[in-house]
Length: 535
Image (cartoon, rainbow, N blue to C red; front, top):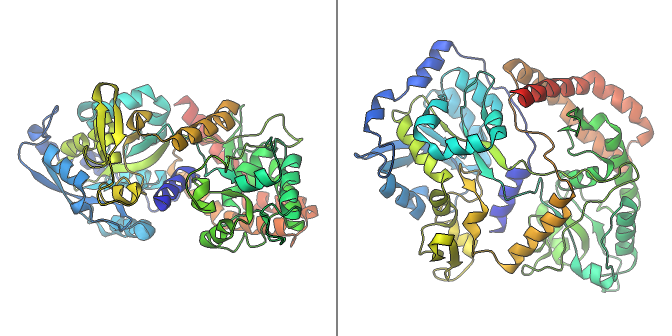
């Protein structure tokens, strides 16, 4: 359960990276992609089930977390009975999926559909341009009423999944009820109680004071000064967004401000202030000195020993240990003297590249009808919770009210769910809505929702930057610039924070970034953002 939720949070929290893998194809290739499987359209039922009257078998490639073979998953068996479409699974382990995906694209032997594949915009533009991925907009209009309505209701999503050539090559995963840009930070409730803290820090100075007290006042009560006020296990990635926001930056690389001006964060004043603050914490041993080297398990071992005062995770008890509780409260973003209010990043609510159809597919119409069911309430319910009667049942179907059933054989509900459905730890193409959880939310779930609303959404959280396409030329240039620039920025962040390099060298650092193309990256994304806004 914990690994799954964290995996999905990383999928949501991750910032957009763009890589260009090959050149563009011919218009003839594109036309070939448009007509793939046209002869099979007559045998597809446009409404109701089954989708096809005579069973067909297609191939599907997806990342696999290795818990259950997809052919044995009840959800996939139910879908086969319902639709008449059977799949041959060509899955690869999640950790090596991107490598396998690249090899498959290079091989010329493609699966009929890519599922949960996290296709980048560059991959879509490249392989769509070559005709390997077929355009979907015509299929959406004719065979996917649920997807069509979503794109009409949320035009920003349509803009984000439409390539510069005007085609849609993939469908997204949509999860509007998840506001977190990254895993939240959580306070150690035991420490708050021991230090008699009634009001959470609201400024960077108040946060500093809390961390200082954690270090000096023995809140775990063991008589040792073994407390670690603040800790990271991902080289600051888990902390960076939340601390940067105190100085006015929404994201650590690219973001658009309220005036639609695009910023390359590592060369700007908010980033400098963030580095100075983190160096202050480091120099006073308020930030764990193993933050740039330790694993997540090593950090969690310290937390379970009740040593850490503030940390990041999907839920606090994943790190702190024990059962879900409301004592380890969510971090409320703080502000510095540089801003009137903190910049609070919000998840955009969708992940692109979740489903695509290849030119090898002889039944694209049936494939589109199949995936469209996942964007309906009934289809999403099946894929998210498993078949009715296994883990859940309706208490009032008219109001969508449900209740949990005992886990067959006992054990953890989420771990059992992972054997039922592929919607576990991957970016499955579907819509996750509040309707799916009516009657199923625990008191803890409701509390987390309330914490998120009050501390993030009600305080003006915004999406730092939309998912959007770069042109092939823009993507190639950005990829080239980032290859060295991203490494340099990460190295210098560690040096500035740990004091290996003094912040007095900031101007020299900025000059180096400019020479390496930092300003040019901002210009490219400004052009792409302006194009997205007006498209």
